[in-house]
Length: 177
Image (cartoon, rainbow, N blue to C red):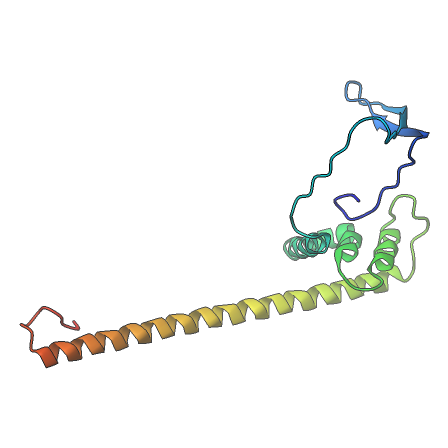
């Protein structure tokens, strides 16, 4: 599995022709590789990190932010945004969007791609509104917490002031001013 979550199949124990870029000349050259699992010694390394789903969600969120800041990017990255959204049929919609913008090796533009792009924009706008509402709710929570802190401080000040009057301490030691 690649970082993008797409599987990459390789034949084992047989020659395979692959293309690679020569780092010295920059030219594309044919290379024969054999993925021989009997040669060598292998260990398994496990590392904890974000799941592919959360990486896709983060990528979609960042793409939405980019489109919000730079709307001209929507036609260029719309297919990638849809591919990273987590709902049924997202890959098919991404393919149609790619065809609509004339993606490489995709054939003629799909007439339904404009509709798909409209759906993507609708969902992106809805997601933006939900994010704004969430941020507003979080700000309200912070304000309420601050008000509670102030009320607790005022109550403590009044308690100390009342104790000061009851014990008749000399003026100026524990005043509320």
